[in-house]
Length: 305
Image (tube, rainbow, N blue to C red; front, side, top):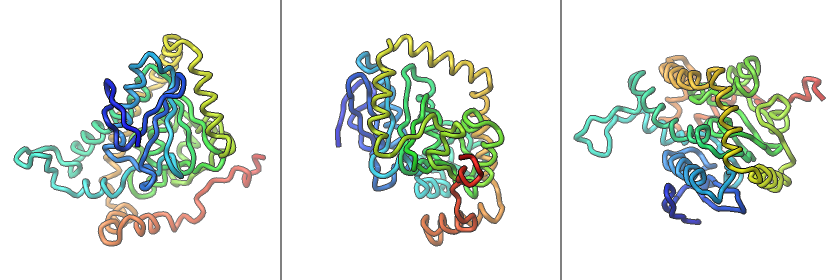
């Protein structure tokens, strides 16, 4: 694994950082866990992006995943162990906030965590998400924050966790696809292939999987030709326009709605938690998703071709 010492990034373990020309390539490097989002990975991603933003020799960033997936979601094993803990921090003599247990504690912890990927939105340099394989749940929380998303045509994109686990704590869905498609995806937890995600605007473009690497690097290099000061102005004015559409307020409320959803005592929510404790994640996911059958939305079947 590549290690790097810089102003922000110091010997990363869960991400790789390399520079190709004027493009920084930040890679999630937990392929054995399908690049699921641990605290370590997200913290190192934040530091890698700050490193890229601070360096004069870097003009653009590509965010990608090692192995078969971009990111298959949050690390549920860690999350559910944390959900049921007693809230003890590193020093058990200090009463740290519990990870859950109350609405406010849940909000507080999610707010702290979501500030880490918020750097994608706040940093001055453009970030391109290169999506292949699975981009699910927490993976979409990362990708949909990026300035541009290019996906493999056969990538799988969606938030199946809305069926039992909660609501996305980072809500960019409405801004990408509008209210009807946002509801269609969140109310069912169904997924889209990359090619169909591009058709509804969830991603900017989809290309054949074997062309994805070259396409994204060529796009990033093209973006990097423009002076960083100019690109910072372009990015920030678009982001300000989104802020005028309420994007900051929506993110705050999305966390509170997710915390509200965590309080559900309905059969799907409580059943998933029980399955996680008794049978483990694999069986819990099977029991959650099996009643929905084939969950991939196929626009061609709707006569769109």
